[in-house]
Image (cartoon, rainbow, N blue to C red):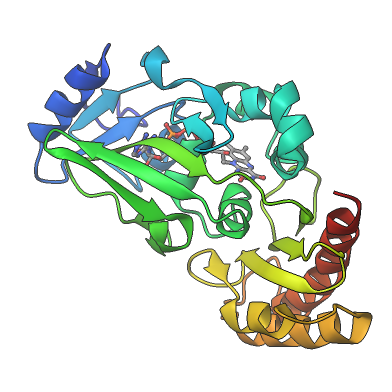
Length: 295
Ligand SMILES: Cc1cc2nc3c(=O)[nH]c(=O)nc-3n(C[C@H](O)[C@H](O)[C@H](O)COP(=O)(O)OP(=O)(O)OC[C@H]3O[C@@H](n4cnc5c(N)ncnc54)[C@H](O)[C@@H]3O)c2cc1C
C-alpha cells in the first residue's frame, strides 16, 4: 500500500549541541527540521516536501523560554509555542501586541503545539507573526556548528516559503528590543474566517516625543500582500518627524499600499488586497497612535 508520507529517517535531538551536529552532517538540503510539525506534516502529506531525514528539535527544552531584561530586551526561544506567548502575563502586559496577534493564529490546538519560530521558518507570507516582529524591529538568532549570526526580521524571509536559514543552521531565538517610552504597537489581520491565514495584515509601531505630539519613530509591517512579509519604509517616512493627523495617516496608508505587490488568488484579487492593506494601515496606525498617547 502506498503511504501518504514518503519514507524518511527520523533523527531526534535531545540537546542543542546534538541538533547542530546532526544538521552539520547534512550539508545538502536532504533533511527538514521538525518542531511542532503543524506546517511540516501538512507539506509532507501533500508531498510538497519529501525529505530523506527529519531532524526533530521539539525536545530541546533549553530553547523553550520567554525572557526579559530591560537592557537586552525580550528573548523568545525557538521552541516556544504560540500558546505560551499568548498566555504569558508578562507578554500581555509589556508586549501586548504579541498577545493580541496570537489570539487569532489558527486554533488553540495548533497554538498549543506549534512554535512561533516554526511559523516564521515556514515563511508563508500571510502568517501573522512576521509583520509584528518587523514593526518591533526584532532580530532572529541563527545557529550552526560553526557559530551564530543574527538577521533582521524584515530580511528573514526571502520568497514564498523560503528563508535565509541555510543547510546546517537552525533558528534559536527571536530578539525584540525594549519598547521606548510613548510607544504604541498594534496589529490586525483581515481574514475570511476567524483564525484563518490573513488576506492582508498590518502591524504598526509609533513612538511619540516627550510631549506626545510629534512622531519620532514609525515602523510598518505588512503580511499577505507580497511574496514575503514586507516593511513599508516609504510610508514610515511620511509619519516620522510630524504630528500625526488622520490626513497624514491616510497619505501614509496610500503609500504603504503602493509598496505592496500582492498576487490574485481565490481569497481575493491583487487590487482588493491593496485596498485592504490601505484600510488596515489607516486603522491600525490610528490605534497605535492612541496607544502611544496613553503609554
Ligand atoms: C490549520 C492551520 C491553520 C493555521 N493558521 C495560521 C494562522 O492563522 N496564522 C498563522 O500565522 N499561522 C497559521 N498556521 C501555521 C502555524 O502557526 C504553524 O504551522 C506553526 O506555528 C508551525 O510551528 P511548528 O513548530 O509546528 O513548525 P513545523 O511544522 O515543525 O516547521 C515548520 C517549518 O519551519 C522549519 N523550522 C521549524 N523550527 C525551526 C527552527 N528552529 N529553525 C529552522 N527551521 C525551523 C521546519 O523545517 C519547517 O520548514 C496554521 C497552521 C495550521 C495547521
